[in-house]
Amino acid sequence: MKISQKGLYALQAMMVLARRYNQGAIRIRDIAYEEDLPEKFLELILLELKNARLVESVRGAKGGYQLRRPPAEIHLSEIIRLIDGPLAPFGDAEQLRSLISRDAEHRALYQVFLDVRDAAAKILEHTTLAQILAAPSSSKTGKRSRKSKAQEADVLPMVVHGNVNRGEK
Image 1: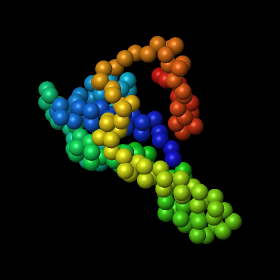
Image 2: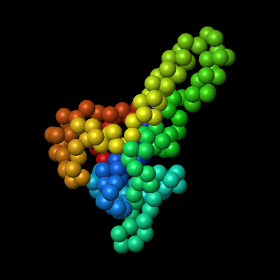
Image 3: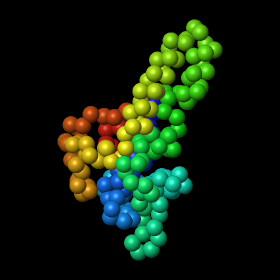
Image 4: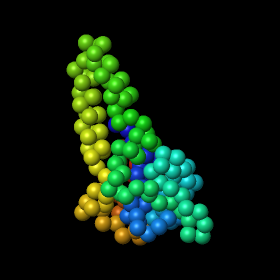
């Protein structure tokens, strides 16, 4: 399963909106600042989330974006599939099933890929934004803090689409 940088940004933005669910609409600028995301890119992501009816926009002085449903009703799989497509390492589950049925020589390999996909999908389909917020490590206060280069060096790099991201912007 691949999660693009766009997918990670979408998840981060949805987490901000979930944290502030009962506070009304949140401005794009505030989401971008809180999560240290590029504002223009975030605009495009939020528009995509709006078109999929996961968020709604509010106009006016107190305008911005807010979740259309409670955080307990939004599963991570919805967000990831919307932004990044199928959850399989390549193709979707039906494509893998087709390969399993017609390629006897590599059937066991494709079955492993399907099992990995199914396990990941099960976790993502059963994990909501509310559950992530309730996790002990998710006690973010909403205040952005700048990390020094020395602090960033203590963080393990995350691989996204084969690229190593060490916090450089």
